[in-house]
Structure formats: C-alpha cells, structure tokens
Length: 109
Image (spheres, rainbow, N blue to C red):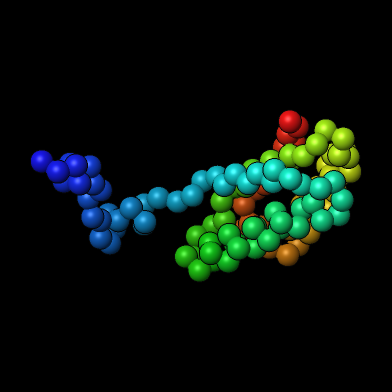
C-alpha cells in the first residue's frame, strides 16, 4: 500500500470541512535583528497589517500575536519597551477592538 493512501487527510465539504472548523489561535513573530530606535516596531506593524487584511478577507478575527525582539545586549531595550504602550494605543485606535491581543518579549544572545 502506498504511503499517500494511508497518510492523507479526508476531504471535508461544507460544515465538516477543516477550514470551517479550525482557526489560527496564536501567531509568533521573531525579529532577530531589531533596532532600538523608532523603527523597531515598523516591521511588526507591517506584519500585523497583512494578517489583519487576510483575516478580514476570510471574515475571521485576528489571532493573538506574540512578538520576540532580539538583538545585541548593548541595544537600549528600555526605550523599546517604553514605546510599547503608545504602539498598543496606536494599534487599538487604527484597528479597533477586533484586533487580536499582542504580547512582546525581549531576547538576548
């Protein structure tokens, strides 16, 4: 018996389809070369915009986001974290309450 005959997903149509019965719960983003200046969260914001547009086109809520920022230990991550509250406020103002929650973490190598 061929592997494809054993290991395959059953087709689902309508109410029983996988696409209708599943959703993305959490999306993790890692910026492995982030800066510590004002453009640190620009890439993250662009990714949010793309995911939000896709979510709206499929008529689903945006997923929860978890963002990891990583760069050299000498970078000023205090400045990055001080800018997060205004970043969150801007997101809420631009995208409303339907936009998924977002958590951020810092990583050092």
